[in-house]
Image (cartoon, rainbow, N blue to C red):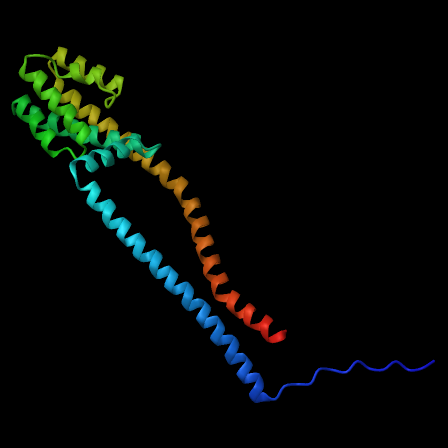
Length: 221
């Protein structure tokens, strides 16, 4: 039986030629990454322009109302913003009315200091109704910005002559409920943040390791 011939091994390249081959591979990778960098710079510039245009739009009166509508109607967080604006304004009006300030002036001050345009419109309507001799709770019954239960309590406070005290109690209850909701939301956010950070770290690791794997594959071939 004739002995099998050994498969000849490929000739090993000299050290200088191997170095030139590695330099060519590295140069190709650098050029490839440079093109990606230019593309990312373009994307970053476009994102900056879009951000500037969005900021300029939301500083206008129409854009501000759009932003305020989104603020109080976005799922989950919208209800929290509603409680925040309502608790602040009720606390303000109740404190000033309890200190002996005219109710019309207290409502006007709350309207001026309210951060949301829709609640400013609500308190403006309340101020007009009070000046016409009507009750404070009447426009709140017609508005969907104030929960029905809170409006009922304010109406009862008006009838009993203890509106300022009821306003402070309602605002305290709303603030406490808001704190509890923020705590619950924070507990839900923590696992999501861990997952997001894991994805970011994994993406950075892949971005660092993929060029090395590509270079080793080209050299091996």
